[in-house]
Length: 167
Image (tube, rainbow, N blue to C red):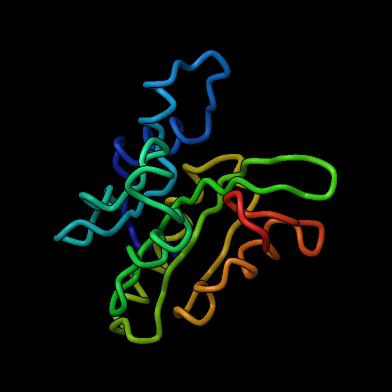
């Protein structure tokens, strides 16, 4: 069921910037790349927008942010829904990889109306995010706080490190 909610151009731009990794990017460009970002519904509940201040830049990892995954989990509100993109860096037994993960955060404590609007609007944002390999619906901190759960979503038992740390 579609909700009639639209995705803003800013959201699509952020997705495309996260999706396209420029091999020739200089250090400044790499530092400004988004590692994680949250999206929410606008005040009038008609648009999916970038949530102000809710992002992690690649340049912050290792300087102001020690563990990007734990920092990301702490950005999620305990009492409302969100959509998120997380750029996961991980290693399997064979190779090093980076994949975008689309996360639908619908915690048990969120209002029912919010859960319904976010659930019915999910297709609108997913249609704009072409090429996403991993989608994850999360219903509470228990499901997301352990990095092993994300590692499982990315490649199961073949994942040996996530964000530079062992799984």
